[in-house]
Length: 77
Image 1 (tube, rainbow, N blue to C red):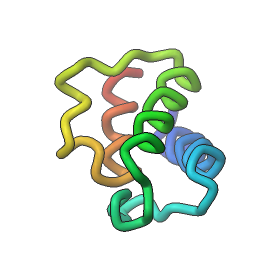
Image 2: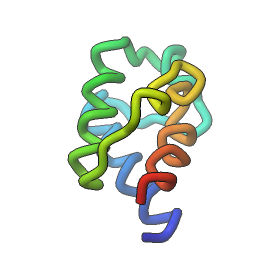
Image 3: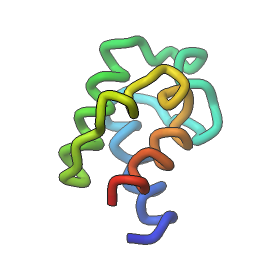
Image 4: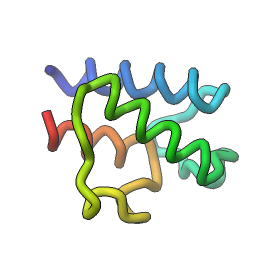
């Protein structure tokens, strides 16, 4: 799967999960994404791509932006 396809899918699932459009480099916390919404988004990404993130992936530094989530997803595909 190409990077632009991953970006499109994650952007779409983020909009559906959070309810607003998020820029890929915008800090999620500053965008109003709370911890529950972030967990819901991570689970939705895992289900969408049929992957399971490892505990090491789910560190705060890997969950700051949609771009971070895209990189993490690519790593598991």
